[in-house]
Image (cartoon, rainbow, N blue to C red):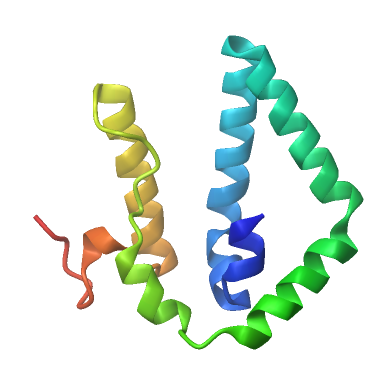
Length: 118
């Protein structure tokens, strides 16, 4: 819910495909490996689907109070989605960072000028 209420509309449009893919991936992974986590995710997603008005009102309230734009915040946020360790996580992070580049999300790894940080 934080991503939905805190980011600006233009940023939400850019991250929506990534966010949906991440939700689906994590939901299926939890279904296959961690049933309690899957149940918690399912309940959370159900709550979001059942309360769009509450989410929208919370979003409006928080957006009115914002003093810093996304373009100033995004360079402080990592585009990686998995911790270090193993080829699969490196592949996931590569895909995530590639998506951030294509979508024009200036995340931490790209630096403020758009060049990949070492």
